Image (cartoon, rainbow, N blue to C red; front, top):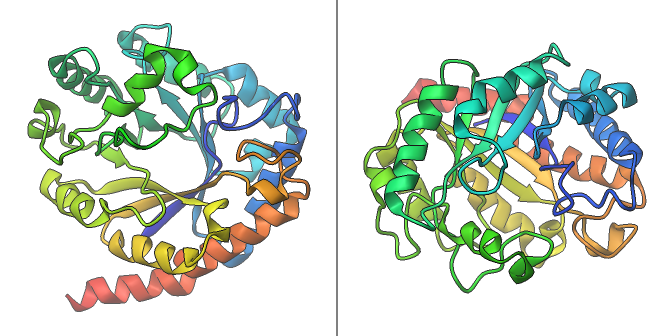
Length: 306
């Protein structure tokens, strides 16, 4: 069942929002507030989460507070990868959370955190254990990224790709499972209490195996995405139905993001939309279909009948 909807992903990261076009994030603010208003109309009980920020920057939260964004959401989310991309120690995690708590009264969730097996699988296993030790006592939700390694034939969602050197290739080793589906050491000792962040791609062949492994790992909380850009692909709604139906047994955070090329100021998934109401209409469709009060009641009744 969908327990929360996240509006965008890493809006202060150029790989996910083009702030050269929107340098003060005013378009982002208008888009987010408009979508949040629509979601409240459909299901006032649904948690609305600000897209997880990366880097963890309290100044960015203060900027969005000034634009009215923080008042429109229920939770502020952060992302961090200190063993792979961030320039701070994994031991600083509690301090990083406190930096955000110092500038907002909203709850803080860690909706993406992980460690790659790029250098050694043992490092990933240690990173998972240490992350759980540091974060589970201080925040309500921690989502490990990710369940699957990214297939070598796919492209990672990052702006400069191979030009980023080893930083780019680390994207391919974030999973608890290798590309062939075999488990790494971290999967065999998955920390109790962690959620999983797993992006299922359009018509992703890994969905069924993913559900099997989420059950095997005892995962209760899941974060995934429903892509606005993919909404315009052939049979997209049928695929989203398959995806969200397959994930119903988990308390799911549904992330809405990625601008369709024809609706952006620039024809790119990171672009601000030309009209913020377009994103709000996509949010209306997604929440009505997968997270309305009626859908939530139906899911509760199914659980009660079991």
